[in-house]
Amino acid sequence: MILLRHGQSEFNLHFTATRRDPGIVDPKLTPLGHEQAAAAAVALSARPIRHIISSPYTRALQTAAPLAAALGLPVTVNPLARERYAFTCDVGSPRTELEMAFPAHDFSVIDEIWWPTIEEPEPEVRARAALFRAEMAALPSWRDAVVVAHWGFILAMTGVSVQNGNWLECDPTAPPPEKIVWKV
Image 1 (tube, one colour):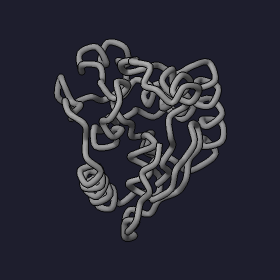
Image 2: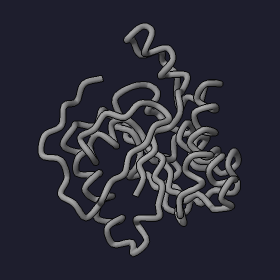
Image 3: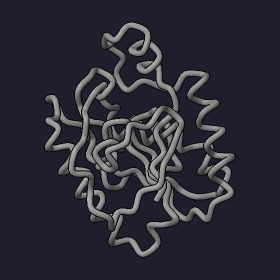
């Protein structure tokens, strides 16, 4: 499967400049983030993709949209692919709001309030990534899936820090990374 990190968000823009939480709840993509999402859609649309899975955060859903449009595929929303809850940006939007904003996406597996309410410890993120890994490994066509996710989740899945708008391939049947360096 391909793990695609969402494009640059309003949070990423401000946090990169100041290294402080700017207090933005469920941030949207910046203009650069939209460009990154469009570029990823062009590059990835040449692949034999049959599934697009996205985190429920707005920045991930916005990143998935151009790829879904280019391929004519639905987006399945899976909260397991969400970011590690650690900053204000990790407060999500309620399911009903997301359904109105993204009516073509499938939100059937998420609750109205789907994000944690307290900081998520690293072992819990790794456990969530392991659960997602098992779900994907059970999918016969996992090789044909793009998962739009986040820095912390991709790090837990692969041990690799991926920049906004970039992606890497991940074999969910392979063992997870033994050591992960959690450094923001």
